[in-house]
Structures are given as structure tokens and as C-alpha cells.
Length: 326
Image (tube, helix red, strand yellow):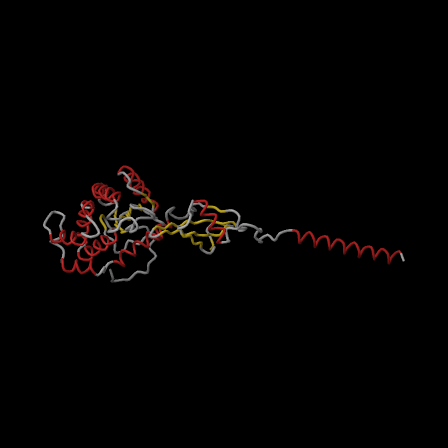
């Protein structure tokens, strides 16, 4: 009898113990289970939070991307897009696994150039350029022919790049801000039409249109360009251009797709204003004085002597070569 009672008590104790363990297990949240409540993975909640954070009320439109893997361990990457007419802005956030913490930061890989992400998005093929191919420093300027600050920055580059005859290769990229500059896109198309005919003539056009910015309107741009092309002044394009071809190119907007290519590239880089220059991938926003630009260029010239991770001989071109084709 005592043995039977002992076995019964032991079995009862085991059952009580198992029940208690089961309750404890159920009371603990799963390690990867999102905490109930507000979450940045809920797109409507994320939109509301970002609107409040940046003071972005309607009519600004907000879209939130699906989460994707991020370079930051334990976080997902979520990109928020804001648009209002032609204006746009992208903001990237890193969201913790439980959806509660949001981090906005620049993430660098010590094994790569700190501006590797920008460099990977910049394609200078087919862009008007000045300087030395193969230079250790590449400058890409995103500009708008109707932008006053772009006019000032253009003068800075044109007057001072001679200080670096072999060290810099400079590229011009159209980024017309159509929402505030009504003739900027048409001017960019015209500039590309000039470039199609003669690369050197483009730089005459570049200088002329900035110098005459105040006299140009959406209504007179076409005729102004034709007059420039048939003129005989020091900046005129007469010697190099077929005016009939130039006029047809402008009227049919034959180069609009070329302009759109650089606009898309600028948007991918997150450009929100002009001028914005990239010196070996380093963003320089606004009209910067020459001493500041020169300081960055000099630093990059010295840095690339050992780093070789930017410029045109960085070894970072991943395109498939086409032998025998320019």
C-alpha cells in the first residue's frame, strides 16, 4: 500500500510540475515574435509617424516600401518616398526586428570607399566632360540651366579647374527642376542637341546660356538658341553646328530621353536641389566656393595615390568589356 501511494504521489508531482512548466513556457514571448502594438512594419503607422517627424501633411504623398534586408544586423531596411508635384524625397530607415526602434543613419563598410553607394549609381557615359581621362578625381555636377546658383557654380568650375590640368575629369549632368524652372528642361534638351553635333560647342552653349539666363523665357528660348547658333560672337556655335539639324532636334525633343537618364540618376542619388556635385562620390550640395572645392580635390588626389578606390582608374568598373567598340 505504501509503495502504491508513493508512486501515486510521484506521478501527481510530475503532472503538477509539467503543468507549471507549460504555463511558464506559454507566458514567455517567442524570441522572434513581434511585440503587439505600434510597429514600423505597419505601413499606415509608419506613414503617420514619418509625417509627424518631418511635418509632411497632405498634399504631400507618402509611400512606404516593403521591408528588405539591410546591411545592419538585426534590422530591416524600409524606404519612405515623399512626392509633391515634381518635388520628391526618399528617406531610408532601419527598423528593429520587433518594429519598435527606427534608426536613420549612414552605414559604412570599412573595406570599401565610404562613398561606394554613390559611385555605384553614377554613370558618366555620354556626359559632356572637361579634363583628363583616367584622372584620379572625377567630378560630376548635376545642374539646371535656369538655376541662379548653378550659374555661379559653373563660373567657379570653368575659371578654376585649370589648376588641375591632369588630376580632374569633370562631367556635366542635366537635372532640370521643372516645378520651379519652366524652361530648364527645354534648355537641357537643346544642350544635348548641341552636344550630339559637337562636344566642344556644348561648352560654348553652356557658358552662353548661363550668361544670358536673365533674358531667356519659356517663350523665347527656342529662338534665342537658334540666334546663338547662327551668330558670330566668341561664344556662338556657327562654326560647328548645322542649324537645321539643331532646330529639328529641339522641336522633336530628340534628346529628351538623354535628359531623363540623368534626372533618374540624380533621383536615385537622392538629389533634392541644384547644383549638387559629386567629387569621387562625395556629395557637395549648393554653390561651394573654390577654396572648399579645391581642398576636397587636393585631398582626393593624395588619397587616391594609395587607395585607388575612386576616380577613373579605380578598378571598380563592373561592366562587361566590349572589345573593339568605343
